[in-house]
Image (cartoon, rainbow, N blue to C red; front, top):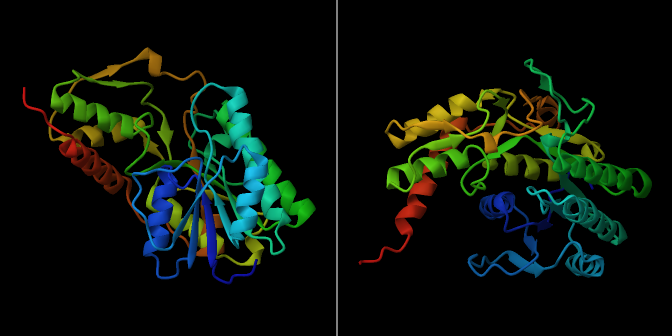
Length: 327
């Protein structure tokens, strides 16, 4: 694929956290694709129809379905966002992240005009356990500590193999901790904000936390989708490469917790919950995004405090929309 703008883009996992923001950004972008094919496992009736979006229902673990869907869509670009991110089902991670990803790659490789395929991995692939302040670039050996991270390494390896053996234009990315409205309530900082909202409503007494001494690299979902689109339009030299998407700045989880509580305007008790501790929690991980900047000119633009404020406003707004019943 040349640096010519992507005209027909297929997005898998279109109704997911990143997928929803991806579609909104593409619709608003002046240089957005003329056709957007939103592929998902099921129809989501809550989603408002958009004139440039074609909805395709397809289970990515069903290889014949994937081959048919992509052959009919004939995209010149694919952003593969769909995947399993939580749980303890090892076979599920393999089926959804590895085999389904390979189905997408195989279908793309069969098209007469092969599309550029952007495969979204994770910083969980690094899995390093050093307690020092280290900035991790793409050359760092991968040593995942979770089933999720291992499945993403396998997915990425398949994608790069398709590039080497079948000349499929493939780009792989490893986003660091993504935050923004719509983030799963099981992840930091959304879990903090939802608990804080519950304390304000009187349905909870405190905020339960795990290990808040760790440091992470947080990047706003709006910056992430901007990076993905920039890579879809990068030159051919980006094919076969791997890119971190990160802020490059460490943030203590304890500081993020304090900022979340500050947004509430009140003080509230915090309780350490042993059930929230992880067996293999990486103390510090920060991403080097110099390569992404060099290839695309991308910059991380949204400060983490602004991300938190947007998330908080979204949570409060959703609560206000909930129906109230008179007794």
